[in-house]
Length: 629
Image (cartoon, rainbow, N blue to C red; front, side):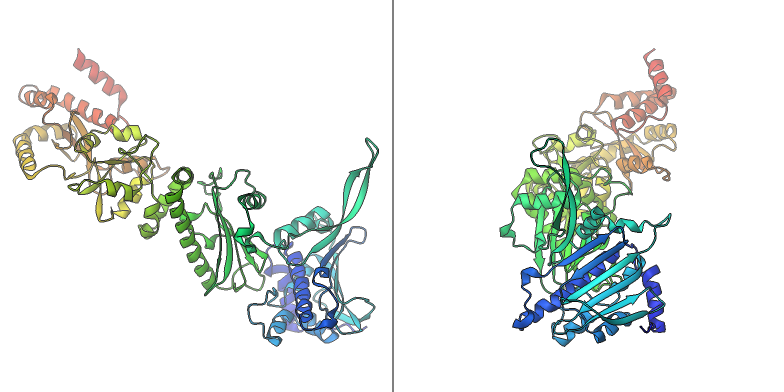
């Protein structure tokens, strides 16, 4: 039997196949099963117009036969088989695709559900096998052929005996090494696992004779091994079924099995899109965030299938970061895959799918917000921070997409745990209200107790309470909502005073100019100004900020590890109606040393009110005692 040589280009390709193209050796089984499925598809297609085929649709199948003693794994199909010429073309010339040629010959275009494209998947077998033997008999032929190869050295082709139409591939596995355990591909559990992972939705049954342990009938402690034929794959993907055929229990069971989460998902999104790119998708919103969700270790991504064959376990390009909590899968027949079917050849289709999914997720969450507020708030508690990060990290680019999904605590909410959307806040605004007011702090209680928040509420205006570290950063990049500017109650002009009130306050500040200059000397490097305030009602003092960095942002930024320390432009504001201001005026005239102590005390008090650390607790304690004495 003559040894034939691969072409020089084919030798290089085969070497690449074995050593470079595929990331994981286990992929070989996916490739061989996909080829077997294509072969059956071709004969099934022929049977639609040829009554002589004889094989009924329900009789088509793929079989796996591991043999530990011989160290062989056999993959058999009863598909269309190959002639001697097709053996030479399909297996002797690497990168010749019989499936692609079949599509062209039968004018099937891209709609036929045939997987093979490149004619290279078969050679992935050499990643795990030292010798590959193919026995095949083509439909309509009374001759069968055997093809054998040990890799780059070439191959042989001869006639052989084979009673049935179809193809049988025998892999003689490589010997185990310290690094590679090829024997695993002879274990029933491992083959079952790989079929479930990559080929669960091949539409023909994949069968294997398996052993199970059963109690002998009529005995108490005697067991026997029972051999039976097991179908390893599900065949019909849940996402290709009609939604009216499925119940919530069906969706939840699939979620538990595929995504190893014992908690029922909050909701599912099952859709099919047809157009520029056709795909099916089944997405889930988990009820709870995974333990590592807000860590660097978390990997986002959806499972990616091409015609029912899994290509990627997690495809990150299908999800934007702001929806990274979504789990699920996408199955498309339109993907341009690279030669290994492990990655995409180019990303145009992927971008179109990702954009469509993003819109679908947003719309479904918006529907949930309107139809089931309690369930949406449950979602928000788990993943709301990610939505706000989506606005901030995109520098406001995703504002229009995400702003309607935002929830915040607020002074008009029924309880401290209640939430308000921005639209609900705007709908409740009084006619004369110019701004959306907010207070930032680590808790609703802290925000509500801020001196400036008291005055805004007293005017009858609602205050949003921003309690997550990212909140104010997101609000600042948004700048406004529905034409209403956001305004921090602790920063800048709140727009609450009349022109007359502003004029009167300016006159009082001018009259106390020398006092404030003296106080500012005591607070050199700590505040940029000391002045009277129109934002205080019952409190004597508060801190406000000027510029882009608020007091709360200063706290957040300075808490970051290895971050550069920043300080807001702090302003010490005094209540002109509080008795303390009269004391300060008197001390300015009578006792400047005591004025300095009172100034420091008021500053430290203002820090405490804002939830900021006191610079020197021991010194503060001593100062209080000295003043008391």
